[in-house]
Amino acid sequence: MTSLIEKSNSLRDSFDQLADHQQMNHTSTDQHSNHSNQQPQEQKEQQQLLQSWNGTMRAILTPRSSIWRESTQHRDLDRFIKNIKSMDTIPRFGTETPHEAKLAELMDNIDAWGLNIFDVHNYSQSHSLTSVMYTIFKKRNLIETFRISPQKLINYLVTLESHYLDVPYHCSIHAADVTQAIHVLLLIPSFENTFTDLEILAALFAAAIHDVDHPGVTNQYLINSDNELALMYNDTSVLENHSLAVAFKLLQNEDCDFIENLSDEQRKILRQISIDMVLATDMSKHGAIMQTIQSFHQSLKAKQCKDSNSNSSTNDSLVLTEQKERVQLLREMLHCADLSNPTKHLSIYTQWVDRIMDEFHYQGDRERSAGMPISPMCNRRTADIEMAQIGFIQAIVEPLWQMWAQLVYPHCQQMLDNIDSNRQWYEYQISNRSSRNNTSDKTTSQSHDSKEQDKLKGNQSTSSETPSSSNSSKRRTRLLEHWPFRANNTQKC
Image (cartoon, rainbow, N blue to C red; front, side, top):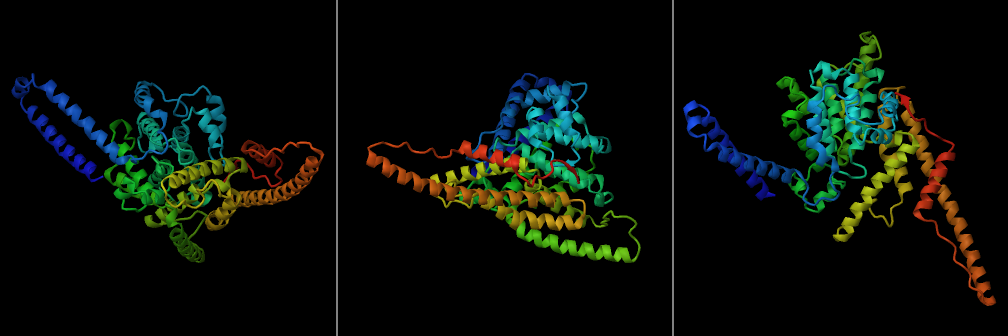
């Protein structure tokens, strides 16, 4: 790590020297003419230096032990950006797709809770994050408000997507899902006059970038394995800090700087809000965040009561005069959106459960092979998925969303209903599993008695089949179809 940083600093100094030298060469026409023969060699040296510099920065920003392969979108990124530059008009949803009509049907529900982001990803040719962000920006008139170049916005979004790794859960689909959730939560009538346009832009940006370049393992795994990212960020919110660094690094590319027309003060505010929001997604801080939320809500209630008594409040909109209060609310909002899977329709929620368990189990496999202690829920041999989801809902998701729903009552009641319904479904699965186990025990006992009788008769009995994982998946699908407590699919918040 130290050698990489030293090399980075050395290259930076050399690059500055070459830049100064180039400027000196252009101060005089005569000097420029005299050194015309040397220019090709100097340009070659500068190009090699820049390549080395970019390679070094990529080495610093990338975890040393790649766990999942990077997205194949990297290969076609330059070509895609060149195509965007040459386009007279931007595609309707920011990306070309032969399924535009299907995608349009889905995007009609962009303001509704529970949009099927997996379908959006399929119909957008694996560009769900680009499609969702571009659609929301247009719908909220952010492109006109901040004089954003549509081409540069698309360039940034596609580049951002390409820096999301091809991991099961913390991928660009999750980023698109969280971004759409933030958009819906911002539409709650209670927030009609709460946030400025710049704060809304920052909130959507934070949601889109919050897990970029996530390697599919936890912060604790990186710390325990002495990963260079953990060393770089001093074991503190490692992945959150890394995602922020990558996202803002991408903005330094001139072709991707879609916020170029923001003033210096606006850029500073956007950056600070984004940092505050993304760092709040670190689950190791959940307990502290919950305490902060509780005290924050109490202060808001006291303020609302005071305003009500003085008749200064003319509508239900939450008015916060202090920016730090608004940023605190946005931090809470992103934390809710990041933990919103159990608030969605059961068929969507279970897909996310499968994906996060794939990541957990792969991490557990790596921990086992390295002789490290296996993290909770990462041991594929012993993990109880149903019990884990019930515990996750009861200990983490439900308390968080109950506090949020109280703040914006009654606009998020549907989320609480879905949480309750999904928890009941997992409880039903456990009950159903116990019944199957009891039946299996009886069947095994009867089979054993039958085998003993067959042996006495000199016959060889055939063994019964055991349910495979595919059968388990089919059984779950049947349960989903007949589950009586079906959560609604898309609902206006």
